[in-house]
Length: 430
Ligand code: UGA
Image (tube, rainbow, N blue to C red; front, side, top):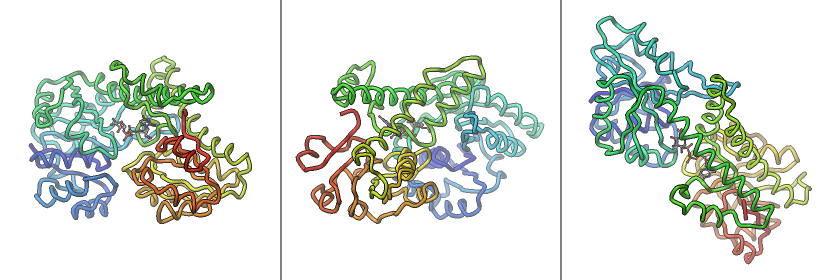
């Protein structure tokens, strides 16, 4: 099949590369010349394990075609995917301006029969708007139908998630459009959910909101465990052994970040409000998430006996999770700012996210590696659970530090072992 992706962020580029790898001809339309020229050379704008290799392989094979032009990409395509960003507006609503803009632009170039598929996360009813826009501008003899095909890939494991999804959701009011999309997704051998446009749109928000709710629930239990002397990790592990619950996304820590959960939870609250429903559960999910971030900074402050001014705090990990360079809504930003307000001097290190972090925090000294980061530190905070931190030589870490104190926001160390090693140690929920 010949298909087009408009947008080459995580969703657009990864999905485009995977479909190219499966043998399709895939255009990727961007709007920044430099980025498109880089993609043609196999240079990608994000850090994602395995992505450079799969992009390069398929660009070289001529199956993945980065371009700035809508023509001939749209004309030749059976399916056009919109995979542009829907960032949050100050109100919490999703900003749909780019979705509508590219739909209009692409619509003008349609030819023959095309399925227009929205992969971007969009509020319920957006696909119907897209259909109206495209219908208005398309050439008279072109036939277009719309489908919602939400994406469930995670950063850091994006290629494997795309190749082996738990489910493929195809929402459309047209059987012909559904059939074409079923055909495209067939090699993935995934369970396919066929539904209408609005239900597909809701599935995406409901999935992310539920996962965020699970994380906030775990953080609330962790908070309670700390107050009562119970061990939240043991408790949540036991809870998760119940197959109806499952243990994934029950790890307490610094709360969820990234470009999806924070934005999608607030967008769903907004969608609910527009429909006269006060989604109080999700408001509380957000409040607990904020509390989880705040409590990491508070643990550091307490460990330093409320005497933070002039203290040197080392931060290991900045990205919102490991195996990504993404800093969007990363808990590390809030924790660093809170400690800086109290006069702390921050030295930080992240294997991949440092360049992105530099744009979001100021007065931070960036180190070259973990050991340099902790040199002379009065306290160390683990903010992201990169593997290289799990394997650190703790004897060396201790010998470099001014005071052997650790706040471990991702529970990567064992409290007993840390005590034996001579650290003052605080995890989450233990
Ligand atoms: C999330 C969803 O997991 C994907 O299914 C979805 O496609 C994607 O959003 C999206 O909408 O595009 P992602 O944001 O890449 O994927 O990352 P996750 O692995 O879900 O982690 C999100 C945040 O939750 C991270 O900050 C992570 O540290 C935190 N988290 C995760 C916890 O605090 N505890 C957990 O148990 C799990």
